[in-house]
Image (cartoon, rainbow over all chains, first blue to last red; front, side):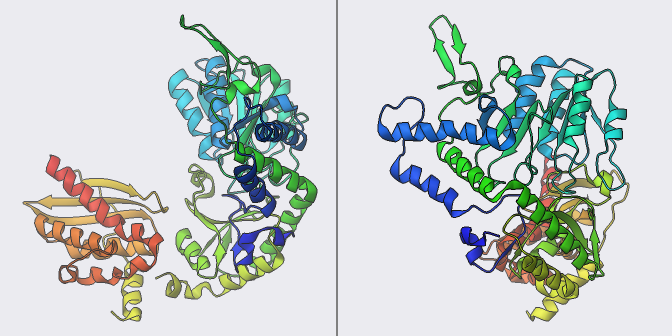
Length: 397
Length: 142
């Protein structure tokens, strides 16, 4: 649907790398070009018309984000993306409140950005990282969460939708468990916020991170949504203009209250404006419609791949638009190079989930990740090309 | 070189590579390479005695180009003097990077002389040479 909004699709490509980044609709690009060509200005301190317009768009984006994921707008911090958001949580908040021996629960299907900051914090503070067991289909069941909790568990930090298996975690259920056990709940929404309804308040999430570029928005911008009560305690990782009330020669200073404390320096203004437009665009289509469309396409892809004998699928059941597979006896990267020959864009590798190999027994996979503009014809094209993959080495060598 | 022959040599070395599999032996130099631009991840080990490469072995997960290049390179280098190895590695790197090079010294490695047409595969082809060079430098620093 809405393929006409995406200039990239004018060329004859099948774009199946949406887990890495999505295409950008014209309205998003136009909003940014408009900023650069018609109302370039910095935010916060300008009294002229262009600056007032820019300021209004920038501030309004917080409201647009808040409505989209059901938070309050004064709980929305603009960051450079999911990775920065999680690092801010770990080193700005958790480093302050966690102590030696406190336990943090993760899973082995987490992205590097939700593992490495915690490993670094374990080095610095002596916290203990534990990995919750995954089910046979690599999903995370509530029972596994419950049995992993001890009286030392202080944090659960997980992806809402994992980026290789694409399994959807029951974050409402896990959020309730966290509330009942006074555990902080951090959710990596990079692969869920763009694709399905995420409800910050009703899922009892303490910290929610996501990126703009995976949801039709520009690169370089994302969000950290956090409950208001953490704003005072959390420390910024960056200091500078726009986030302080005063500083004096005697080294005294006062930082701003609220979300702007975490946005030192000139923020990515064009990108925030682009993000606003992207969310309005997704909202117009309806996030539930997008989710439904992706699930339908995934089911169709799985069904069609049953006719292809030499394909191993790793996540047939997961309820998202992500499918991880390998062609038998072919290295994932050779497969993606083969598909590129037919203008089919996928991703090969470990997709930054380097521990998942412990679970699925293979380091590298080919990942198809779908979005609103993918079609059954795209799937057909992929399947047809995979069907004739016995010739793969004639193509890739 | 004929394209079919080129493909056949590469495919043979991919499907049945020389000296794949590591051994326990502390007299070998060891290095792990993984390229930033691709997902190949290979371990190499090399034995040098009296300035001569006695053995090179490798193992790991990698694409057709990295794996076959490792195999062909190992076959080309075993038994050579360290100085000869350096000349081969240098000319190989130049060939992959489209610089002037001496194809005479490269033998079977010439099958990769057109890999530059696929820029994303240059690093795959270079992987074994980077690993072996690193081990040689390590030897020099001993």
